[in-house]
Image (tube, one colour):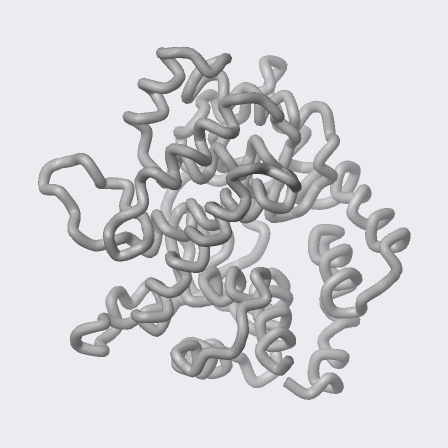
Amino acid sequence: MPASKTMELIPWLLDGDPAIRWQTMRDLQHAPEKEWRAEQRRTLSEGWGAQLLALQAPDGSWGGGIYSPKWTSTTYTLLTLCAIGIPHDHPPAQRGAALVLDKQLGRARDDLFMRNLAACDRCIVGMDLMIAAYFGVRDGRMDAMVENLLGEIMPDGAWNCRRGREPEPHHSSFHTTFNVLEGLQVWLETTPQHPLRNDVLDAEQRALEFTLEHRLFKSDKTGKVINHRFTMLSFPHRWYYNILRGLAHFASANWPYDERMEDAIALLKSRRRSDGTWPVQHKYSGRVYFDMEKTGGPSRWNTLRALRVLQWWAR
């Protein structure tokens, strides 16, 4: 994408929520860290981040539950706060992250924790890992979650949350795979010099190769679109996969050029509106505290994310 085209949209992005502003400053303007860090901290006192933080219950939870109701529970609220990019060291959010891990899996790496971990959906393990790593949980439970995910890789190289259930799945799930990959990515970013690091990087490479074999959204046997919703730009994406979510991960991993991504890149470009922005095309039903953006109109979230992808692709 020509740099001039990106630059035309930057004033509009900077006119949005602090969540959009600080990421635009960092990723598109390449502003000094001191400047975008200051803007990042404003997510605690202004806009979407501050609105969600104000809804936290005295016990550290949101929505009256840990994983449900969707999408107002503690888990999904913290995932949204991760996407907004509030500072990692915010104590109330750290308290919520500890609560998620304590309630869903257990307070310590003991026999009960390991049984709960083995029984948990891999989607949820990936989410829990992301939340815990982002907000600074550092104990043996983190290693156990990473080891669990490495041990649950399907023969085709990725993950399916139905593994171990009847009927036994024989193919990985895009939804599960990207919930896991995003959790592992945050763990990698926040856990340097770990003995499992190379194993996690190898697992990421295998899972992304699985995604490439499907050109990010197509059957590897017929070439047809696997699921129409994979082609729809949704945000927040919750636990669901779509091509922008997939491409964003390749971009964040600074993956080298591969022609098998070209169909998804072309589809992303085709979703661009005449004003240069990208829309939110679809939302998943469920309770929400508020809508960050309206379906159908120009989306700062998806425009920022698409521009990051195309900036990486151009390199």
